[in-house]
Length: 211
Image (tube, rainbow, N blue to C red):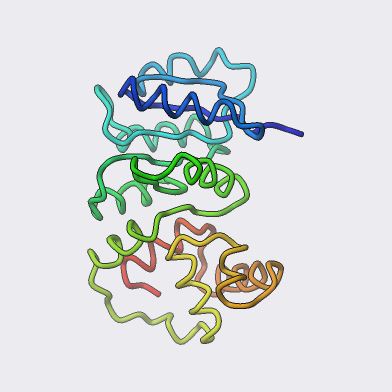
């Protein structure tokens, strides 16, 4: 089995030790880099034998913040998914992270098992985001009239809402009583109709009331 290469960037020693102690022992994961700052992460990155596939990035860091570092990390690691982690649940900060290329967003009070699940989900193409975070983002932005709402069928709008709620394909399938393959077909159709290329972009468009 190919292990998922994971990098952790967290300045709090206790939180870093907790995350590393749990995630690095998981059979699906391989912690290839653990750093206490963005600067240390970028400094050590060229020495790795293989680049990380997922970066679990604290948003509030000394020196360069996780939010400011996102575009740079996306440039250095275009194939990697960046999963933001923070104590903040401020909708504007979350929205900025999503627009900057974050693949998902988890709060620091998220159980460790759920953080692992978020890592696995983002690798499989999902966009993990707690329901509380998704609600805050949507509540923060007042919807504006959309010219695209009539492009989607009722079922497609239900799929979009489930994605905005942070559900992965299997969870969407369970909620709507569909097969996983049917859900994936709907998602592809929605992407094509709305001219988006990722779940993150879909959630961002929904947050701005453009769906």
